[in-house]
Length: 319
Image (cartoon, rainbow, N blue to C red; front, side):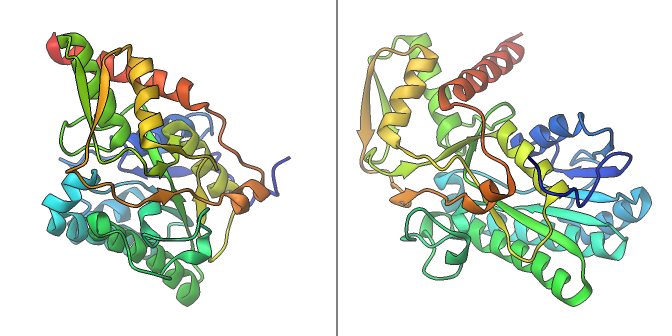
């Protein structure tokens, strides 16, 4: 049973910022079932890192609600290689959209954060209360600082102006619409591409970064989208909410599962010269579960859908 409806999306103008990304596109797909008008703008038409453009667009379109899923994203390598872009672009996007949303009368906004906001050695599973209780993971602190700022902006607008701005913190995502860049993608997409190419070339081994021992939690993008819509409709509060499955797996186990889904039967080796990142990252999802939402997609099923998406993109690229 769902809690009382606090914000009905039916009949509303709803802006999905970042609709071409994995999370944003999943949110847009999920919103198609809500009888609302979905507003989007491609990056070429609207640069959310530009304050004036952002303010003009929101003032003209006047959305009732905003899902803020836009941002520069990437894995460990990308964060290490482009720290200015990761902190600067994400800070600018969060500030511009949240400030303009308030100025133009947006009734409700949901900011999409990231579980990398938590301390590197946070107690497991990680509760929302562990924010700012210890040092961040150095390999992605630029992105994490920008996401923390977004959370605090939402809280600040709520406290000072009573704005109904909320935040969710998803765990590691995978699914259709992911970025499969060989150097700058997250773990699921990087492994899907690596095992696919190894299968195609007949490579006897595939290297996986790190020792394989860190534990990670993986959430299907469409489950995240369902959680975001659920939270937008049924939650309003100063505190942010973790979104995850409540279950984790070692990178080594995850790599073997991806290899099996892709159909690669060679040997997996671990490149210990590459960084592991945070030793473990499992979110405590009790608060969201208490509201009535839980993830529904089994990991293997979700990876099959992600691999099908990758294959369709590869096929389109080669035509």
